[in-house]
Amino acid sequence: MRGLGYQPFQGGEEVRTVVSIVTVYSFNLLKGFFVLAASIPYNIYAVYIVEKLKHIELWRGWLIHRV
Picture (tube, rainbow, N blue to C red):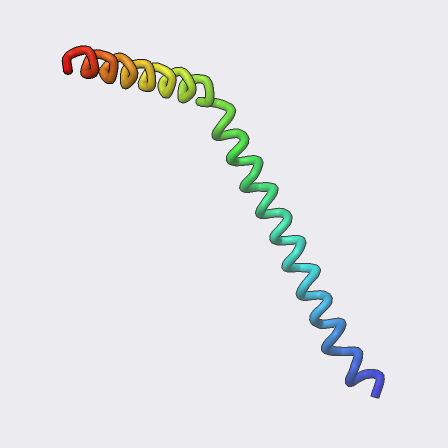
């Protein structure tokens, strides 16, 4: 009786443990990759976006003045 009730439970626990370990590992790997990818060109992107926004603002101001 004990064997019948115990085996599936233990099997489920093992699978759950493996899945959680894999999930945590892959999540950390992904997080590390994104942090690495974001930190290298971050300044370039920030400068580019700021310049683009300035450009858009200048155009908007010019258009408003024209109209």
